[in-house]
Image (cartoon, rainbow, N blue to C red; front, side):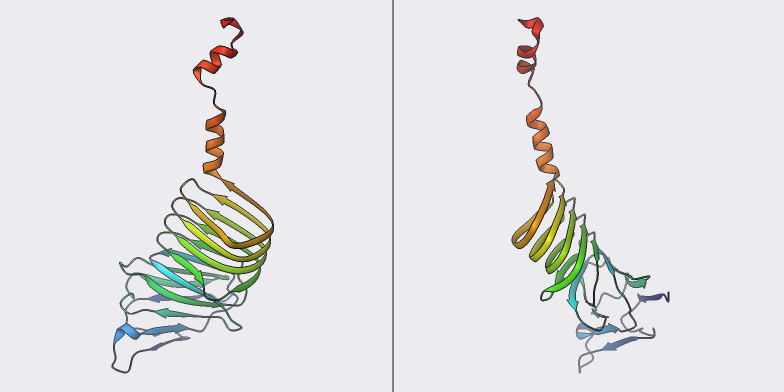
Length: 212
């Protein structure tokens, strides 16, 4: 499969095939938008660092990078259906990703992933860690979320089946989400249950037949 790799080096160098840049009429870099059109069959999005991903569903796949001063230390790379987006600047890099049908989202660092309007996929697997955040409005047949560390996710829409794993410090908002069948496992709940089941010293002495 053809591999397409694009590395953003400076705000003024865009020489990769399939990448177009537009600027404000006065030449201000603050209005720069870099469009990557040579993308095909995106199935997985991996976001890392200080990036904000705007996820949209469209018949034609593409990526728009709203890059004013973020060209340094930023990377957008597609390989074998996986789209990787990362930036480690102080200010977040905003990237709009237009996809037909994906099945996996992974985010770490301070990455933010949020849908623009509702999306519809057969299945969707979402993994968040570190301080990553996601706001997903989707209709799916199968939905799985794994949220750890201090990551958080807010879901809206619906799924036939929903399975979730939640870390002790992670957060999950399901106020606007419906599922026909669901299973949410929280490490905080498991830890609390195990803590409650631990007998105290007095209980151990009372239950000891040799103390009677």
